[in-house]
Length: 391
Ligand code: PMP
Image (cartoon, rainbow, N blue to C red; front, side):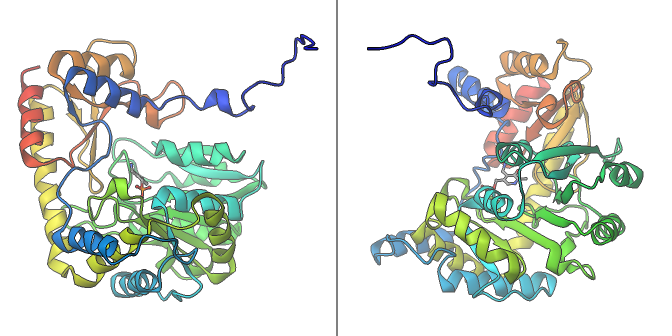
């Protein structure tokens, strides 16, 4: 007999009510509904480099359709090790210090599972990338937001120092950063490194936009600073560099002491990263010349200029990103009390989807900002710019 009870056990978890559809995805859905141009999601629909695309098809034909070793195929781990050595003079053992992951996203999740306990505090810089905060919170890790100083989002050393408590276990960093386009300077990274060493903290660094740097800016990995290799976990991937966001392929590098546990947790969720695509990414790393990466930056610098100019013409006050492929723009002139209202207004008026700035800040901040992604094919970007100018 069913006994009615006030306290049903058919409930969502304590965490679940906080996990709402992200505003970014909500804008994409609305944009699709009205047939607009989506500058909201960082989906980067520029073409996949030919060697990568062809190697993926070939790998499927060649039968690479089964599970791989839990930390990825040797060929790709070797290629990632060679890349880190060439780009940053960092030495990682492909046997024990590289995890091929299901995107940088899967990499962060595995890293957090392996290193952090519920109740631990992790410092994030604000504006932050929503997945970083939500991933940690979903593991019951407390995120502590440290604002970067406007207008250029420079590091506020005092704010960072003040955010560190006895419960702090890690600083999570994204350079070049989404959504601000900030590229942390050597001096800033030295401050972060100094505090991390002084307080014995991990530094988790999302370097997915490493090749998207403009005006001569240089990406520096905190792992390269003295005393930092053992405590820095880099997570990155191929989504952006090879325009393969849907393939779900990334990697984590770090000291062998930590990597085994990360691979264990990654295995529990994903078993392995997509097999055929691992071969494709390896082919890309092996075959694409340095000019590919330079062209990638040059192409996006030109896209950045086009969107900046259109945004200014349309009355926005855009920040100039030094890296990544987003512009955060002030939208004082748009009606609406919140940035979500402003984004909806812009979508209705122009058919251009952006993301409400509030998605990247604590409650009450970012309400005047909209984020625009400019990693779009030129034709689509130009159409979006033309529509913005008609505002
Ligand atoms: N990190 C940052 C900062 C991003 O902006 C994104 C894409 N929006 C990701 C990670 C996602 O990377 P991946 O596709 O490798 O999971």
